[in-house]
Length: 107
Image (cartoon, rainbow, N blue to C red; front, top):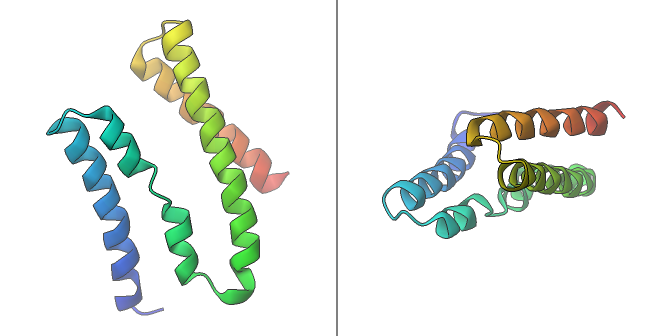
């Protein structure tokens, strides 16, 4: 793999992260920030997956999206219904996410 083949994926991911930061800080618009962060990076990245691995990647990507959805709902639940601080809810949701990822990867 050459260095040049990493530039476009790197710029794509960087653009999305920069868009989230810009929308949340400068535009003060959490809805627009969430739209940027929800861009289907995994679907974009299928373009760079080897043909015979695309189906397995797609299945795993769907499961990872479900894990992300569950983790995000867990974060909102902790924040809104249990009145935890944003940082505590965030760390708990990240830990929850990684536990589910480990079950997916090793399970």
